[in-house]
Amino acid sequence: MAEDKEVKSNRALSIYSRLMNGRIIYKTEEAVRFGVSEKSIQRDIEQIRSFLDNQAVTDGIPNNLIYDYQKKGYLIEQAEDAHFSNDEILATCKILLSSRAFTKKEMNIILDKLIACCVPISNQKIISDLMLNERYHYVELTHKQNVLDKMMLLGNAIEFQFVIEFQYQGVIGVAPKHREVEPLAIMFSEFYFYLAGRIRNIDAEKEFDNPNDAYPTIYRIDRIKKLVITEEHFSRPYRSRFEEGEYRKRIQFMYGGKLRKIKFRYSGYSVDAVLDRLPTAKILGEDDGKYLIEAEVFGDGIDMWIRSQGNFIELMDQ
Image (cartoon, rainbow, N blue to C red; front, top):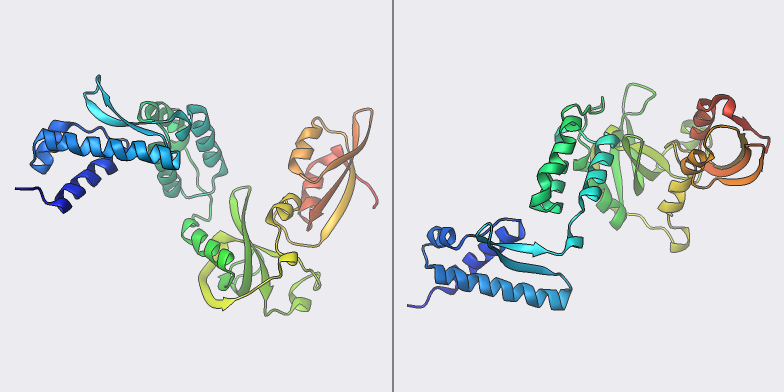
């Protein structure tokens, strides 16, 4: 009696799924699991191998199904560049931990998934061990808010240009304020995720120091409450589209405000640190280790950074 096609297909898909997730397949175990002969499992394996070979030709995805004589089972041997190297995954995980962007629970879930999905099985223990102490002593931010549940909601609103509404708990004042916003971009800076958007239906003369400010308002995502994606679309002509990359170069401290050009003399230890901090900075001249620098920035956040540099920075008249 011929084997049912659906049963055979489901069995092959089960084996394929486990192979692609890094599992080792043993013919004897699979035969017992599905109640078939080892020859049937061998045919499934050959079918999967043929599929992977064809996929490598058509899609350029090199996944080889091999028999490992030491482990006495079948496994997927992926191309080296399909996985992170030890260096790459360790650096990525260290950056994530240093960002402190997520709650401890969120951070552990992300790190576990990165290691499980992106690192060859043989390398996973050493990567995990190198982060063990830092993960144990990880200190989450004081707001303790989950931000991941808002990320894709905001991302979809940005992509499809939906107006959003929310309650925003700012730094000043106790009561949250209702906001209606055209979302433009999600950014990250120094521990926090931010939303850049154009605010609507507000008395700009009353609320803003600069009522004619045409640039986006910045909101910390962990302070956004009762987020609602409305059915109302907004649109912007292509010529006036929001250039997130260019904006990001000029707003380093996540404070809104007008576009400014500043000029200062720097006499500190590392001018490279200044150029890295301010991507738009240009050295206009140098005299005896003192650098004349000009930069284009948004808002007043730059003033706090200048004050933090003490006598190393002398602000020049514009």
